[in-house]
Image (cartoon, rainbow over all chains, first blue to last red; front, side, top):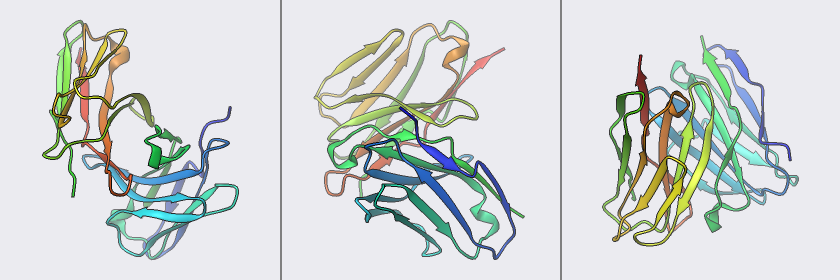
Length: 114
Length: 111
């Protein structure tokens, strides 16, 4: 079974630009969560999607948005990029977070803002 | 909201020594999950505990869930270089199923 696939793996952008990251979950997984990870900040929850609906949202500004498609693939968009957005963005899928299923992570997208 | 405090932030050990990381909450946790993230890698699920006082073992790793379901620990006996990484605990909120993550404990093996 293929794992969680995130593309691209690396991305370099400049301030003010926008970026879209993609996540393909494990086949059969309907819940997709996004996290931001920076050194010393641990895993910061962005949002979770289930059946194309945003079910949970973390404390991030509205510049961070996402969506989920009918095949459970998810995208995350960040607009008006700031230097502080430089981080590893991780996507995780599970059968259903609501039933406390474990999360399976992708390798992440490392975003660098210049 | 619910918070999970994880300590210590770092632990330096000699290879062969033991390692322990703790997670604590002021509120009752419905469950606790443990993950390991190797340097340069992504978090990998290790185990989930749901019952009060539960103890589970995976080879040299022992996971415990407190009787009051407010704390949990991960203990590694006789650490090896393959144990290097950051260990995270996470627990879901009953209200919205969102996973609340501890800050992680980084295990460093002294050369």
